[in-house]
Amino acid sequence: FSKLTKDNIMEGVALLDSMPDSQLKRQMESLLFNTWGKLDGAAAMQYVNSLEETNDGGGRGRGGRGGGRDGGSSLLRNSTAVMSGWAEVDPQTAVAYAAENGDTSERGGRNPLMLSAMQGWANTNIEGAINYAMTEIESSSDQGGRGRGGGIENFLISRYVNEDPQAAGQWALSQSDPETRNDAIGTIARSMAGNNPQDAALWAQAITDPEAQAEALRGTASGWARQDPQAALQWAMDI
Image 1 (cartoon, rainbow, N blue to C red):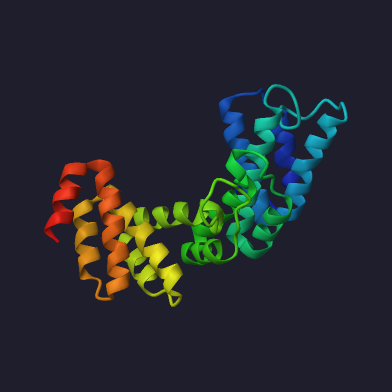
Image 2: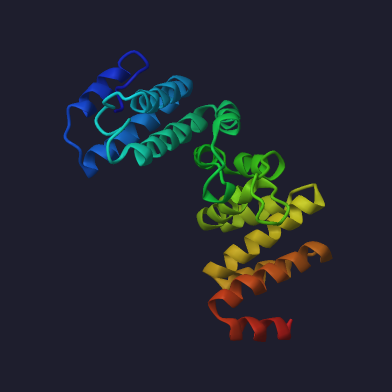
């Protein structure tokens, strides 16, 4: 798909339509729609949605994308593939589309289009994606808590820790808003402790700001306790 452009993208669609349904076809389909999202996200989403409308209207669908046994799951799969690619090149427009058009009636109030857009944004600018999630996204879930970010920020922060824990820690400590900083520090400490509790403990104890350190210590204890409650308790008693 490296040679696909806005002008020949439908040739790729036609090629997929000619293939029998298989796992390989579904994988190629996701790749094609991700690529189309990077080329022209709005047009790609319009096409994906048109397949659903064709199927709802009694049409035959296309190769399983608009109908058949896989209709509902393929719509979600292709939509999220588009959103991820779109957000890699134009995150602000992609997340605005997701906010306006995403369905939060299922999946605990989560917006799958927004989640995919944020993942795509994180592929190119993870700090920008986290900052947006923490300050701009509000969850429609009624499951309790403040709902800021809809939980997406925690997912992205954990991803950042897995990719580069040192950079993630520095980013959290650099946040100017105390509430944002402390939320980020607690999430990072929990995630770090889940992977390497000793490193998380050293990081938390090295923080000089008392309030920030308290958040890091609590996060470390919480994340460590999930892996080894007795070790976590002993560590907490020793500090």
